[in-house]
Length: 159
Image (cartoon, rainbow, N blue to C red):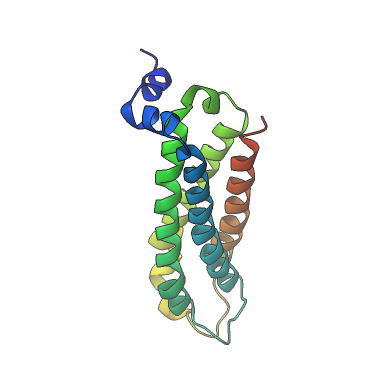
C-alpha cells in the first residue's frame, strides 16, 4: 500500500477528518505554535546579528528565548503532523509541501550546526563583543529560513 494512502487510513487521520472542528482547531494550534517558535527564534537571531548587544548577553537571550521556541516547535510539529495525515496525498501533491519540508531540514541543520559549533565557545563572545561570523551567519540563515517555512506553509493551501 502506498505510504500516503496508508497514513490517511490511520485512526488519527480519520479522527482529524471526521471530528467536527478538529482540523480548524489544529490550524489555530499550529499558528500559535509557529508564533511561539518564530517570535523568540527571530529575537535570538537578531541578538546574534548584533541587536541589543549592550543590553543582553547571547547566553541570557538563549536561556530565556530558546525554551519557548522549542515548545513552539513541538506544538507546531505535532499539530502539523496531525493535519498532514488527514490529507497526506493532497498535501504532498502541492508544490509548496516539499519546499516546506526541505526548509525545515535546513532550519534543523542550521540549529544543530550552531549549537554543536560556534555556540560551544559563547563565553568568548557572549557580552559586548561582536558575535563571530559563524554565529551571525547562523542567525541570518535562521531568520530567512523560518520566514520561508511560514510562507511555504501558507502556500500549501494555494498550490
